[in-house]
Image 1 (cartoon, rainbow, N blue to C red):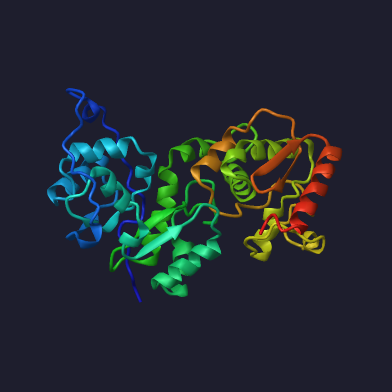
Image 2 (image 1 turned 60 degrees about the vertical axis):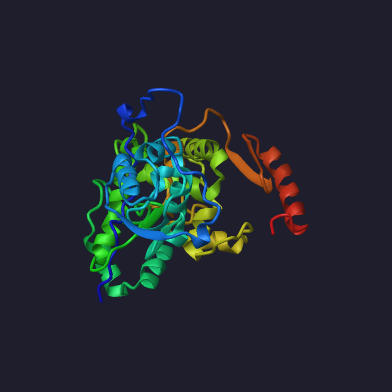
Length: 336
């Protein structure tokens, strides 16, 4: 059985400088905010894969969604979220403000046949989404076998870029998976990652990025990167809980039992020194950037003692004192 998808790779908003030139202080013609969307007429617009920001703006104007293409383009250029517009069909209200148009383009409830890959998703979770969409396991297995990967990579784990994908009819699972990998290759942060560094190959950098993604909040990514790279530099085991959670396929767990750290697996960084053999999830751009540019610091340990309170240190004694606080807070239900 073949299902399809609409493009698959994210539409990139092309910032064309000439379109940003203003002739005066007034904004481009724009509809006022529509507060009666539930009763508004709607239209289905198909955004082809690879469409530029100006092309999207033109489509919205031609279909009477926005009052001017310039208004939408300016809103899109000023909002980083516009980079996440998915190709494919979008259900949009007519005669709405440019900001509302962007919000609707990003609304997953307005995208038919949507597959969402979240930052930190495992390949197994993405497989589940592909099956729910309608692809068979045989089709998906074949897709993973024949998909073209960037040079230096042998497995798709970590390469299925986090994004929203909308799929057209009569497109194969292979094309769907390839679109996710191609979207990875298009990401600006990936261009630097694919070059590698003196210390790490592209595959190793992606593996580091995946651990960063799984271990820390975005605000701590660069520090987590530093801890990982400092430990690798001195031959210290990484001992990252996320690698064990990956083996056990556990989500939402902050506690790791001593028994689980004894699992015999090359991904168990409590037993195995160095990096695991490959990524443990699909990292986002920020995690990949952090892998390339760790913060400056001598930290070897970090721990989240309470939600929103992650601490970094070089001292094992200080880490252990913070761990006692974490245990107390966990037992008190702070992490529920």
